[in-house]
Image 1 (cartoon, rainbow, N blue to C red):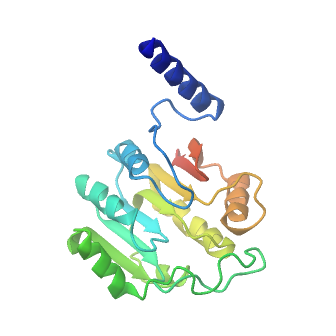
Image 2 (cartoon, rainbow, N blue to C red):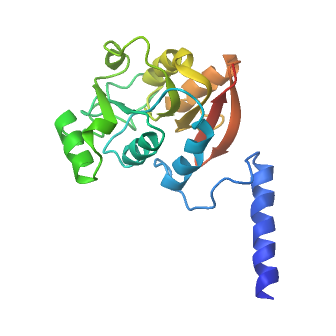
Length: 220
C-alpha cells in the first residue's frame, strides 16, 4: 500500500508539472518567494555546460544564491560576476510603488559582500564584482564579456528593463536567463518589465516557470 501511495503522489506531482508546462526533471523541492533554491541552480548549470560564457547574477544582496553560482561556474572553469550597488535599491519610479524604497537591501558596500563570500568559503579568484546601480555598473564591463547563465533579480521596473536590453546580446546561444519576481499579469515592478520583454522577444524559449521565477533559454 505504501508503494502505491508513493506512486500516486509521484504521478500527481508529474501531472502538476505538466499542467504548468514544466519539465519532468524539475527538482521536487520546497521553495520560498524571493530566493533561489540551490537545487534549482544545480539543475540549470548542466544545461549550459557546453555553452561558452561566464555566469552572472544581477542583484546579489548578501550572496545566498551567488555563492552557489560561483561554485557551479568554477565547476565549468568559468567566472561568476556579481552586479549590485551593494548599497540597496535606487530610487523607485512610478512603476514600482513603495514596497522597495531607496536603500532597501543595503548590505554596507562591496567590502561587506567580499567578507560574506570569504565567510562562505568562496575563493576571490572565482568571481568579479561590478558595483553600482544599473546601468552604471555596466560601464566598465569589457565589451567582449559573454554569459552562459544569468540570474536577474532587481525587483524594480527600470533597472530590469535596462538590464534585459544589455544582457540580450551578451548571452550566448543556448545560454540560460533566469528571471526572478515574475508574476504573470503583473503591472508593476520587475513583472511589468519582464512582460514587456516577452511581448517583443524572439530569441528566447521558455524552459520552466515556478515560484515567481521564469527560466528562458536563448535559441538564436
